[in-house]
Image 1: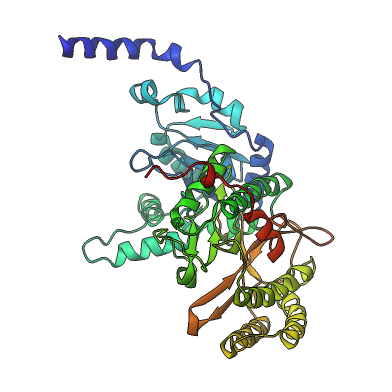
Image 2: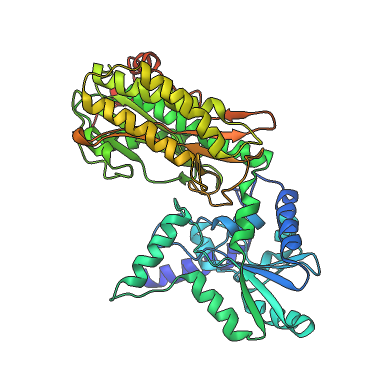
Length: 485
């Protein structure tokens, strides 16, 4: 009887599913960008690859486990489509882009809600501005028809592994390399497999890398992209400030992670930009320490580096503060010297000047700050001297860089040489180290290059000692909501 009722109930659900699915209570297409912005990006790809080529992108696969689907960055950048196992074909000769979507899985939609499929072609075309929608089984046939008319043909596809959830290219490459070097695994990348299949099935085509073209396009952000990064930066800053209020000796590092996540998700973030880096005491010595397991102690100096993913755009902000709420004398002298050097870099950022020139200007102020600084220990002075020397040496290198780009990935990729241009977004994060005591001092802010200068998006998050101590005297979430144990 129980089995019969289950089968009947499931059958009834599938019968009424089309009517249920017509009433969707959530957006199925990006509301952060209009179709025209995605079309402009695709037009830039058409122009870059030329008429005797096409570009094909493979979307993200079905996620592992009970996790929400998140599209890969490049696929979203060109389409705004958030459907697993989708493909995109850009044809410059026709100035046309075709989307390939899986067929409807009605049983899944009964349980999880509506997902765009090829059966929704007309609706998808209207919402996305894409030219046509087919099932993935027709991608090969369509490519064959193009080859028949235009062989030999160059097929562009991203050859770097795609950026997924809380992932930048550096970590994606590390994951692929480690799996490949595991003698009991040896997996190759999904991007590599796709490129090989294209070559095998269509040997009269040449596979080329689309990644450098997309990197160059993503380097200069539009006004709407900057607004998304601004939103992500605001949430990062609000989370750091709430963590300052909530920090007390005896808490675990992971509790500040929980505070930040509350701020992120309460305000519309769709995930983490990267795992939280919350290092108290000597844990801060490792810049990417992320275990969050230590109980914080009176006298610790705490580093927190954390930001959300807001509509596929990231931020990256770091602050440091004393766990007990008051900077100790040694913290004041090291942090004070570092902050003076750090803000000298910020003040010099502007368009039309390359990173090396900006760094050399900052070094002059750093040297003045070093000459005026007083340190209680010789190891602190040596650390300060080493910091200035290292920065001076870095400024003189041909590949001098102020920091790293920020955008759809926390560590965005893109061309690194030449003068700064309006629309570029990056962080600075020089680090001062005292190896004898395992002391590590670092700040990080998100900067947008503007036509006349630069805007520090995270400037509202306090850096000066008095402002940090003041905010730490305020009541925080963890004070109001103590641990259950």
